[in-house]
Image (tube, rainbow, N blue to C red):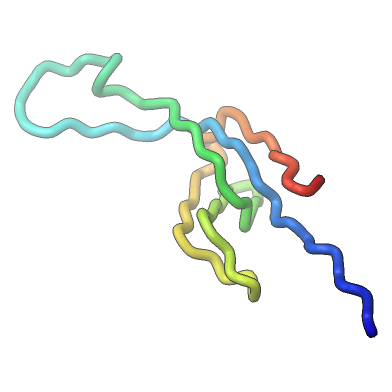
Length: 86
């Protein structure tokens, strides 16, 4: 009987990134509420290169991703790996 394979965990990451912001209707611009926002995300890293980072909320056993988001590298302020395996 073959030994059970040790489960390989995907790479999980914490990302801080700057996002655009929009407003609705008429009003005065207020930088603190209408300017760029610092967003924090925790997700599975599915792609990373010099141009972008792609994140996913879920992966199936075959590696297909759901709930993906791509962030331009220029918007990323911090990216840290989160260790999942014990």
